[in-house]
Length: 158
Image 1 (tube, one colour):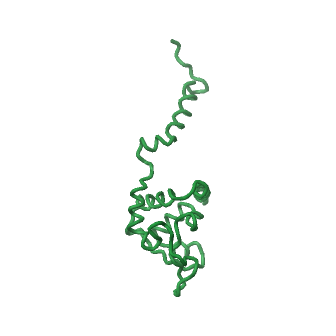
Image 2 (cartoon, one colour):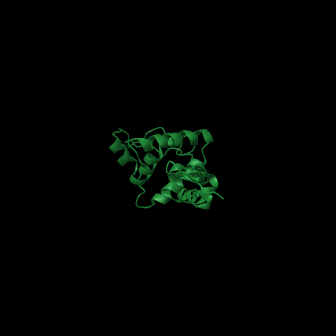
Image 3 (cartoon, rainbow, N blue to C red):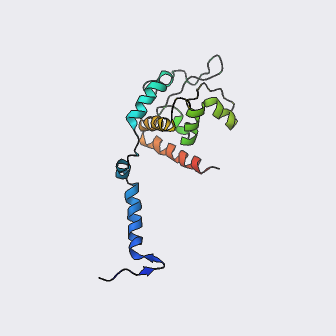
């Protein structure tokens, strides 16, 4: 059997093996194999314990979430498809949960009074990710795709 000769400093087999490896490692089964698929049950449990008292057990939010309270803050919005959570990228959502709404909005220069407390002292980054994965799992495919696009654009921003 004749050994492969280098072509342009590479082995011919690498041109076939590399794309195949990339495909296999990015396939859904790779996530299961490497155990990095979302833990939706963990996210649901954390959401139930930490978020549901304000945002609703079924992600429905407060009935009057679009009307300000007497103190100027707004009630908790829904996290289902009827809300606006999916209008934001993952970086902003993680930050909003971790540092609290007002800190994030103030930093962005947004004149809005948020009643969202900070959860960074109660939830780990993994907990926050699990909650977001759970919330996203309830959205229709089109909304999930739109939110994923926004997250990709956000990740490229300076």
